Length: 148
Image (tube, rainbow, N blue to C red):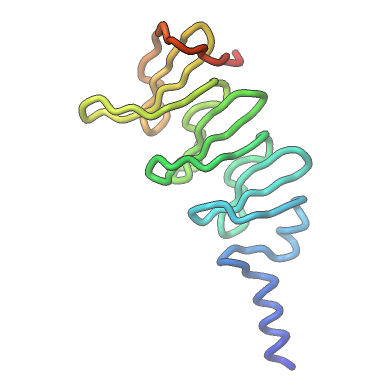
């Protein structure tokens, strides 16, 4: 009988290595395993991310969060029709969610991301999120709008 209670308690407190005790679950409408030691949380119509300890690392204010495979260190974040990029390593927003498209680039030994905004505006960001270069590019497809 005692063994069953211990197993039940451990099941309630730890699921797939995550802290999911009643106090944590009650904060959110939905909690789902995401990737690389994080959980996707929903409250109302917004989503965010928590770590294994149940600490909120990406505030619950985004429309969606999507897995991004570049070195398994980043996730796309979406808000008000814009796309941004969040680092799972640093816990910081690398690119604010106001761009239509984002892609990685490599030029020699320089790596980073290009964010495409309205009026063919392109901003190049380093891997740590510093805006390194801004320019206008005449692209053959419609560059989706930057929100600001």
